[in-house]
Image (cartoon, rainbow, N blue to C red):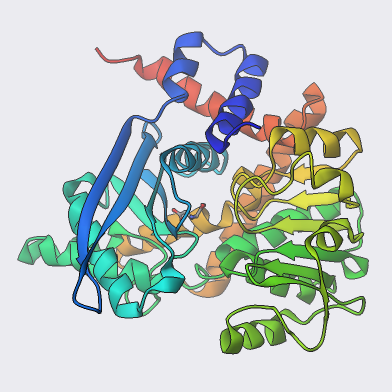
Length: 417
Ligand code: GLU
């Protein structure tokens, strides 16, 4: 089985061969520009020091400053962050956002640490990154295991290192901050909201009635919850949910708001009284119209894809589908809303947040949502018309459009020196 970075490479190969891309440009795009790894000590609550490994991978910045989230997870590794950074480059280009791509992470399990320890880890990591990030250079954001509070700690640490007269000018060093500390309304739900806008564009194209639809969600974090909540508002029925504690099913439908409340009290979905507990195979094999992976990479594989009985896969996660899993489902006529489109709502509203910080503005939520919907719908249509015109699958079409935009800029600017 290929690892996640090899999967990202294979996807790029497909898009490049369709574009007949110059080999030297493909070579450039196949590796990140910068790979930064820092090992840094942090004081734990018990008085001992622990050493942490942090990454910041800057994939490409020809379209604008590096942009992408910071992940806290015990399985974070170099190849994963490299793949995630490349996907950010494609995502921003597809959405026509003036950013490049980056990703970072720290290899540790935040569930095993107190809030005070996580704050110290975050601040020490930000300090270790130093001048390698900046509001016009590389702008982090939340990802798995991080949230608005993490971003506020990063911002505060960075601000405290800036000169007296520059503190406010560097507020845009991170996006996904709390609204009170300079974040944008609508950013917290943005990835789930963008996904639902993309699903609506698909439903419009195929005259599919979302109020009759059923769906499953893998992962019940920020992306999974908001996608489920917003899709339920369209009248769709949430049948199955999986998280790190187990899987549940209800034929009548699960209320995401109630489930979230339960999760906040108990730490996970396991034992939720208004649904049945099911095993992993039942989770994957339950028939639903829409399947939303919103957890880790490589979940839809040669093992799980044959079990699935779905019409649409809307990728809330980055890289949830491996090459075999994708081919198996494509052969059965399943359509994909690929990650670089389906979860692009997060970075799109990050861009809006960054703009608001630059202009010292505060947009209302309607304005954010409207602009997000316009961009999601436009990107969906661009992808679909390219896919139809050339008989491509959606992922290859989306990636080809994205790489093409980057190619034009490389051709205009040339390669230094
Ligand atoms: N981590 C999110 C992603 O994978 C958001 C990145 C951002 O807002 O910069 O797209």
